[in-house]
Length: 343
Image 1 (cartoon, helix red, strand yellow):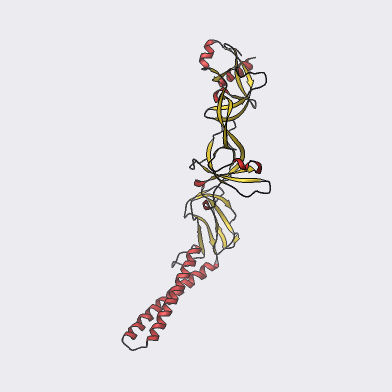
Image 2 (cartoon, helix red, strand yellow):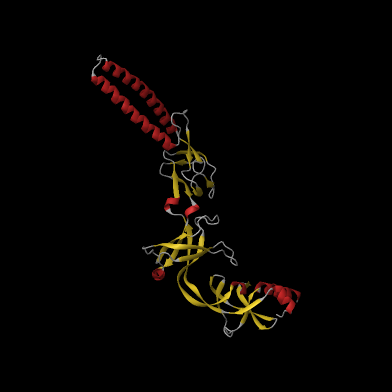
């Protein structure tokens, strides 16, 4: 392809040669984003019952205290009835205690009557407190009107990762109904083969992209190795955990797959600026300068990328002394496509 001087100036082309630069040598691995145990909570119904209503969907954002579901259980009525009965008995016991205290102080009644009334009042107070605790655990109002339903509320804010119930379903006290994950403290969980574990150490930099990112312009994020697992799994791999450098990223969600590189050292590499590379029909190319204004597409194999430079492997027959377009390569690619369409 040949350009006039005016076309070269309009395209803003810059040229240069490949450079040897020290770059991080890394270990390419895959993994997922996950939440630590303290950021994930499984929610059950303490007394079980029937699910009367729920509007939750997987992925819904919930606030702490928000109603997740309404449960119906005849036992709720029994608990509230027993609480009100105990409260009434305690009221009478306290009145009797006051009367026995007065009689004892006036030396009309013996001490044992006063002590018996005192023990009765204290025992009822303990029972009432225990009954009130049961009501709170069940999500019922203490001392309010008797109702057959109770609200199951979110113990913390986060995203709903799992919904395991439907309206009308009977649930038990041990059955997990919902799972909520707080995404503010995610970590990277990477799978490293047994033979490579020795190269991984705490504190090493992790560069990762999401599997859902654009192939041509993936956004790179960073983390640090926090923990290298000590157990080798059946597939001869070890889990490596990394803490994110930037946690408050709305694009990061538990369960997303990631492609990562764990930086295990540095070595020299043959590089070109990122602006020198173009992707066309599934292959990366750079434009070699054959003569002033004349350019040729050369296929290259990219490797590591860092600080605006990418490691490249030149094809056989292309010397490292070749001059390449280092800026404006996509402008050349656009002109080449236009020329092919005109033909």
